[in-house]
Every structure is written in structure tokens, then in C-alpha cells.
Length: 316
Image (cartoon, rainbow, N blue to C red; front, side):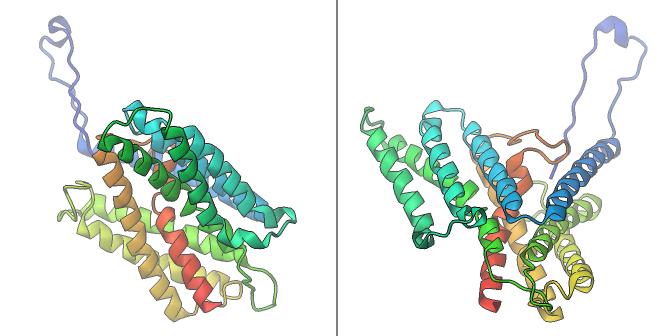
């Protein structure tokens, strides 16, 4: 969520003589931020709808993989000390290999050992890092910090978002007995993003009471309530629109799932704030104006995808 900033422009004495200094009102700054975010959101929805029209699992997997790798690249760029980026290429190689193998069923391959793929990926990355670290002198506790930062980045940006292609592998059907996993994915993305929109709009207009100001000064309890309201409203709209395509979600589940997704979506936003505040960085990237980078785009999906996958796994 973009935070308000005050910037004073300093002109030369001659140019400012007899003139009142120009100031940008907070209202106009909010309008520009909202306009940029709205345009970016429309573009993202267009991309998602284009992929959805083709209804190809591999397209969703490719899009998810691009978001994962893009987020991972941004994650390592957050760290100003080169040592914390020492093993980034190792992580890229393991990540791409993991995502390709994970999506192999979409290409006509189905390996039984893929069930243990997450554990194998973490074990491979950690073993490779340890072997590589033997080449350099130890640097006290920072050596362990470098390893922890690398493994955390892999789990945070890749393993958690990988629940999106895993969701597409669930045997989900509509009332006619046809595969309807794409519609469940649309539900997940829509409710998650409506949570972000609700928190932003309500928080910007009525936000007064800070949630956790030491982590994210811009997050308020009013925005949190807006996130839940928008999530529930969007959940019911999608339920009544796509009811036959998502039969596992009854009206009761539409409320429960919306509340759960809204809660963890806000938690995901705060998780990214913890990372950025810890490394003293304001923005993770500028890929989408008004939204930010890849990490800003998927910070909530990183947490909602595993939860929704587990929920559907239990119901199915």
C-alpha cells in the first residue's frame, strides 16, 4: 500500500522571489497513487483473463513460475551487502528446476517421486550452498545468516507460490463432472486481490487506528475491516456467478474461506513489510506503477495459495 510522502522542492532565490512555494496536497497524491494502482490492476486482470480464456494448465504454471522467479530476483536485490546475494544463482537454478519438474504433469509426464519434490529441492539447495561455502573463510554468525537468508528466499518466493500449480493438479470438477480447477484459481486470485483493494480503499479513506506501526505505519484496523468486507462480498459475487463451476464452496464455505483468505492476505502483506523494514528498503521494485514489483504483486497470494489448497484438499 503506497504511503504518503511529503517532498519539498527547493528553487533558486531568484525564481522563488515573491512566489508562494508549491505544495502537493495529500489528496492529489492519493488520487495519483489510486489511478496508477487502478491502471495496473486492470492490466493484470486482462493478462489473467487472457490466460483463462485459453484454459491451459501449462499457461497458469508458466505465469506462476515467472512471478516466482521475478520475486526471487527482487528478494535478493533487497540486500545491500553482497554476501547475502552470494548464493542467488544457486537458488535460481534449483528454483527453475523445481518449477519445471513440478509442472511436468502439464507436459504429459507424471513421476511418482514428485510427491517428495519440495523436500528434495530444499535438501539440494542446502547441500549445494554448504559445499560452496566451504570455499570461503567463515565470517562468524554472518555465515549462518547468509545461508538462512538464501533458504528463506527460496521457501518464501518459490515453494509457497508453487501451491498455485499444485492446486491445478487437484481433481476438482463442476456439477457436470468436468474439470473446473481454473475457476477455483480465479476465485482464489479474485478474493485475494479484493482483500488488497478493500484494505487500501477503506484504510485510505477512514484509517485512524494503526495495526502494527512498528512494522507497517500505513496499515490500520479500519483497512483490515475493509479487507474482510470486500473479501466476503467478492466471495459471494463469485459464488452466485460461478456456483455450478465451484460446487465445493457452499454459502457457508464462501464466508469461512473469505475470512480466512482475508486474514492471511493481510498477514502476507505484513510479512513483506517485515522483510523490507528489516533491510531498510521502501519498495521491492517498480514493475507495476502504483503496485510495485513482483513481491508487492504476490505478497498476499504467497500466503493465501497454500491455505486455499489445503482447504480444497480437505473438502475434496
